[in-house]
View (cartoon, rainbow, N blue to C red):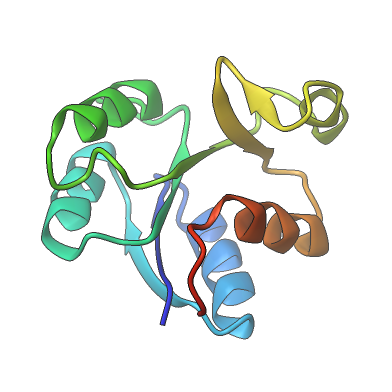
Length: 125
């Protein structure tokens, strides 16, 4: 089963994404901070990480850099989650901002799943 780690300090956003992912048959892990997300990623090696950009303490960019430096986690695909830019802006940049896949938090359920499936490594869930 494909395992996805959601790292977001907003509990309601984690619940929303968890429900969407569980309904699609994914195994879901959750972390409420970048620090706990890093630890969880190292311990569990998920197939994909949904990583909030803006969090207190260490932000998503810093967490992504840390993940890239760790031999256990450096190859895990990451999709940034953000409310900073709109769904239309993400589409205008073809889903890539600063070289990373990104999903606007305002994106609808169908497009969230489509985007995740595009980024996931080729393996069944």
